Length: 488
Image 1 (cartoon, rainbow, N blue to C red):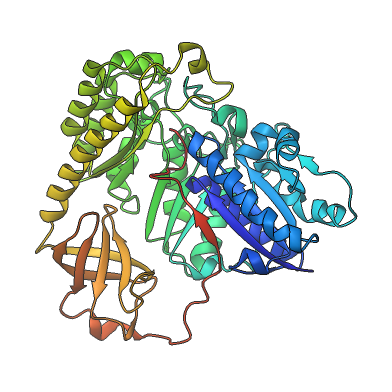
Image 2: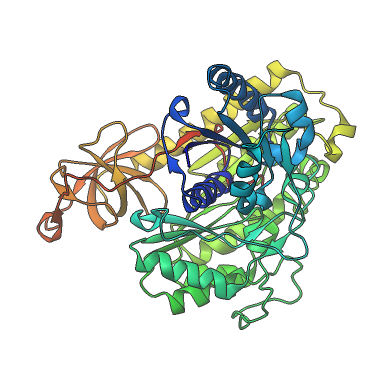
């Protein structure tokens, strides 16, 4: 058995898939390493939502291929969305690749590696599990329970068919995980020390229980075509896993922000007071061309209902600039929506045509320079709003779930508030804060985060820090700018 390194590109779904890749490799007897140069197996877990991710993959394969020239036994695996989309063509284009596997084939990786050791042409496995959807849960050996926060997949695939999006072709149609399995995984994680769980899915709030075991949630609206069973699932988790401190979900679609889900946010204290709700554009003309299945008024109506139910809730979003046919008036409508909603953060992207998508027929007629200008203007508005929001928190008292020591300053702890503000806690290096929800005083606002110190009385109830550390698992990640769990 050898050593492996996993390099991750893209969104939270990809990062979660990397957890499962690590888990199956550990289960087969392989050991992790941070250094690809020291690995016998390098797994590149890819994204194909935007062209930039493909460029990163090709560059990384070229770099690993140079290592392979000196160590021919080194095995290069490409997994994830780009692997699913290109399949055997990927191996033909980059001969250094030994194995190509799609997101639904992670469990097959150890067997494919055993075959690859025998030599022969590249091995490709990219079949969707349509007839019997399979969801890999963490194993007891992968160390997930040592983290304060964890992700749990509840569905995969997408049925929205937005005109710009390749996800339906790389992740397949929507398939849902049984609620029993979801609740059992959440309970196991909490029993192992996890305090916060994020439910994952490409369109997470379209969830429907294949077991049909969930009772109908209060305010379920059968007349709303966007209604789903996510609210009922959240209620079941809250009832059956009372030790869970915080629950989030990502990425939802605006049309599935139903009355029942708004009611769950109002009534379940475990649901955090933050939601990432992709809008993509503030122009009705662009939303129609994007086939978003909601317009500006509906987005604002659903957001308004949520904020009325949960005062103080914060919102973040995804925005595409330079989509086919976008005019200055369309872009101005996007900026006005961003201001009207008052997003505390956003992820902005320049439109890039993707294979197989309907938008290819529309052309890519917005010049690159114009896209750059619009993206810069979007970020300027976003940073203005974020700066005002963070500055307004100075002097306040917040509850922060500490996720661990800061990577840039190990003597400092980093965590998030219930509303998703990042807080850096100074002056508590001698204490074990990871996994604790602590009261802090906000003393400073940075560009994208907050400076904090423990509130009076907190220090006395906390344990001294363990100098041995928390045993964090090694992983290299190459995230995209502002990557979310999916295009939403």
